[in-house]
Image (cartoon, rainbow, N blue to C red; front, side, top):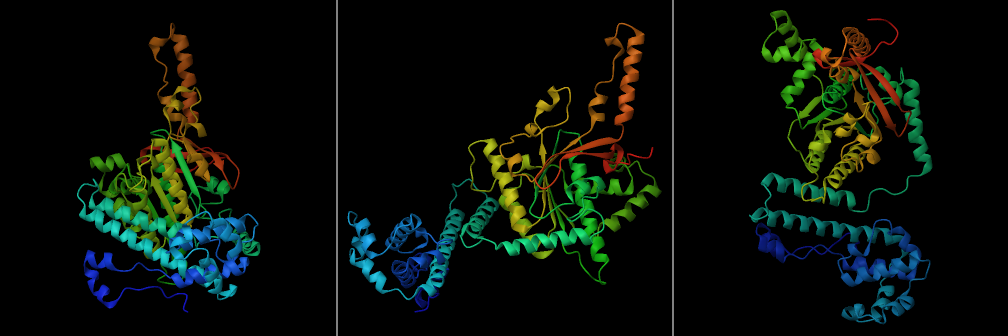
Length: 507
């Protein structure tokens, strides 16, 4: 008996596959002999259960009675009890479950069908594979029926995303992945990371952010990490995320150029810009790198020399492995599909999402409230980071309660719809510019009863403005793998540019 053979459609049924009627008449994939043989092996020797228990459940059996028997066996073995035809007969004697298969004698028949404990895992996989294929048939039928239906309220694009989401769930929940990793292998992987840190110059083990002091605190961007970058409007979240994405892409390009001629970057950077268009984002990067004001570029107020520099920089940047998707309100399932496609075709090293409150959860899901919806999105982004083994940076808005405090530096509790944002994130960073708030507090002469008091207040305000001029704070409030603290950055508003801040030398 071949454990991997299943019941297949006849040639006549195959010829009918071009029609829905042909599909519905075909016999779903199943392997009843493998089911009986596995149950017999476990009933004869309960140790056979250990070979399949981590990926097989009663729901995977094509024959419902076999599935019920397997679940009963599981309950007894998990409770430390013996599972054999005698003990199971007592469990089923007051039930008519076995009536359809000949009664309690079926248990004895199963024990006689056993072919040895050594083959148990093979039969379990054959059963599971048949179940996966039955699920694929169900998904296919749902896709066809939804496409024919006109009252679903879903567009064709939404139906594609729903189908992809169903396939993704099947791929991730099929029960065969995961399991224990031997500690010696985990130690070997940890040693590899330590060796990279030891042999590399500087403190960066992961992908660089392009910001010296941030790299020192984090060691760079690490695979499988979800990083939240949050801030109030006008703080510069998008500019900072763009800076990090550009720096990572440039590092990937530089690494490729240092290799043999013709070497392509081993990965790329994906930016999902839900708020700004790809053209606006590209203009920001060009403005920063060419030191030409983006506002002047849009108004055409630049000279020939500046325009030539703009063109030259654009040629250099066009080689970077940087990809921008500006689909508004993109769903989690669509984002996942595009990331997987990019990883397969170009390689993927970093994902940036601007910003998560503008995303939609996977198509086909209907969260009860906004907090649950955001929780599903952050959990999905964390799952994406782990699946593709890349860092994911997601921007997030902050609630208005920041504005009501005297000290407006953000805290974790300020995260909007923060249900699981803080919980799912490996790191949470807040960008804060004191200069923005100080500008709004310029003293007004009418608020003072004397010129001297006004002058004193104005001078104190000017002193604070001078201290805050072109400065920003990146507050690392949570870091699962390292220290927290504040990183001081240079911010140049004209070019929306973040850079390292020299805290030692003036100017």
